[in-house]
Image 1 (tube, rainbow, N blue to C red):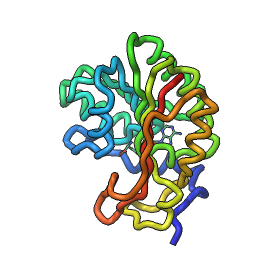
Image 2: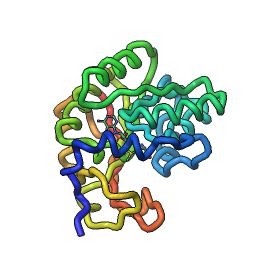
Image 3: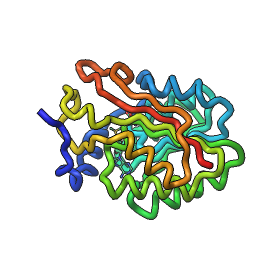
Length: 221
Ligand SMILES: C[S@@+](CC[C@H](N)C(=O)[O-])C[C@H]1O[C@@H](n2cnc3c(N)ncnc32)[C@H](O)[C@@H]1O
């Protein structure tokens, strides 16, 4: 059975708001495997910008390890849950911002965050590219190209076209399985080179969902 569910694109905002409503946020969750990998690959960052931060588990993980983090998500309930956890945690080096890729607000937020920061910045987006529509993905790359500076890094992990038939744990919702070759082409056309790329099983296993994912680290040139 294929799980590519692009018809749900118009309802995905409501899906994610209901998904995160009432959740305590990510303070106590373990991080993703990808977050642990990225942390050791990008020391000495001035700012980590997580886009599509969801329940915030990776943002809190980076912040607990001393990284200054600005997290952006389009779901207000996700952002509110993370704010509650941030207040409980007392962490002062992580902020949460509600803005949707595909709107001018996203461009304003990411540009303001970048221009207020001296030194190296990384944009981190896990399980986010496949949550975007095609148009949103184009807008995301445009926003990154506009806001980021030479030498800045971008880290992605996403479900690929080879994951379409695998078992899924979360309820049926909008997903768009992504071709890594197209990501590389789009990255190149927006002024990024690929510093590192890998794909396979075993990188993002969650219960019976062992997604076939791709990871990459891009650098703005
Ligand atoms: C699959 S979740 C990933 C959450 C987290 N990164 C993780 O790995 O657990 C996708 C997230 O993207 C957010 N999202 C989807 N479309 C978005 C958009 N156009 N702009 C901003 N956030 C969006 C959803 O609200 C949700 O939190």
